Image (cartoon, rainbow, N blue to C red; front, side):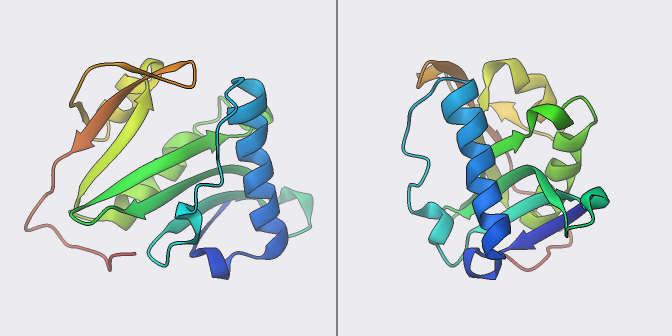
Length: 157
């Protein structure tokens, strides 16, 4: 496995295509949530795409997971967290979250978690910050990890 962290313009074209195909496969088709995945935030200069590549294919790596880290001003936002169906159950979401949290450093981090994944995110220091809500037929809860002043801070995306 290899982790690629890149701005939109730094993503190889085939990798970008595979990222959006995976997001469509899982969020739109598998979860039956027709929504505007291409919301413009992927293109923002400060957005970082974290892509998990399986190098076993000999072709530079098949995309098996992805997420994005957005800069929402006073905090970072993690979203579009997805692992390919064939790659689930191998701890790959944790690999991506470890990388994402390192990327965010000591900043406050927010996300909207599918309700069934609340405990997963709590392990990263997130706490539920509001009531459960329905997003495209899937129940979510807003979560945040408070900023951690004084800790080493990697460069902000």
